[in-house]
Image 1 (cartoon, rainbow, N blue to C red):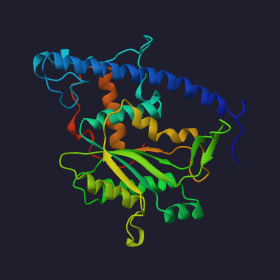
Image 2: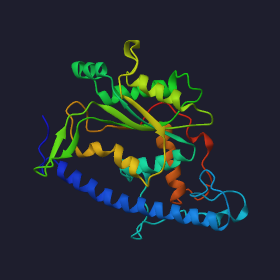
Image 3: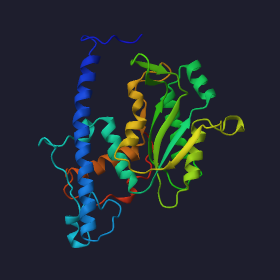
Image 4: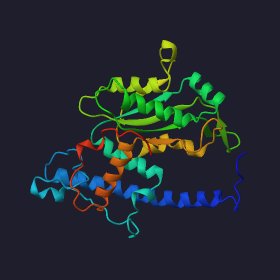
Amino acid sequence: MAKLLTKKSGILQRHRDQDRKMLRDRAIFAELMQRKRESEKLHDAFSMPITPFSLYLPQTSPTFNDALTAFPMTARPDGRPMPDWPDLTPWLQMQVTLMAMEQYGTLTVDIHIHQEIVDRCLATGLDMHVYIRDRVRKELQDHSDIDEKLDYFFVIEGNRSKINRWTGTPQSVKTKPHIHGAVVLLDDTDPTAVTEAVARACGQTIGNRGQTPRSVHSKLYEDRGGAYVDYILKYRKSRDSRLPERRHTFSNGAIGGGKLFWEGLTGKWPGFTTMPYLVFTGQPGHC
């Protein structure tokens, strides 16, 4: 039975705390994007090409490259110290991780979970988020026909909230469970092979019947100022009894790479100059 939203339950206080953190993190992200634009102008002024991480982190050569970035950002817009990685909301953790993944190349995926998997989870009480998480890990990191072990994050979305055009009130719209996520692409990784691997994880080849119509979509990521993370985390505004409250997953390599990038962006690791290429190599396990 769901807990009532009362003072005694503590849920209301947690929601208020989360709302305050979201306001803080949106202000931080807006400043990160402003500094990114300033770094782009600096590259243009010196007629220097933009290379992986050069907008965000001082490079080792040429010697004047420190002048090509507006980072690190050591304080929040209100002057307070920057928060540590564990204190960030999942929203900002995902934004920062995606900023780091983008330096290599990133594929976004939107894939329906096959109805047989949905039915199996509901009938047996399996946590659908955990079940799909483990299947994605196996496809992308354990026994994939893809050469590299690939890092990623994703969320599971089910029913969504929609405003009733006549009453102006929110209402739940029943939707097939599906995942939205991003996979880092290394070297010559084939995006089609990645899409097929995630589709298999979602059961789209169950019984060798092939994909169900309009169930699999993927495309190369293009930065839209944080809009993609807003889009995939919209599930937070709705509830679905088929799914747990926590529905987001990072591979260990993705969360580790995001944390390392955050420390570089905020000057918490003063000797940090550039992202090691092997950050995104796919450590087993999840956060």
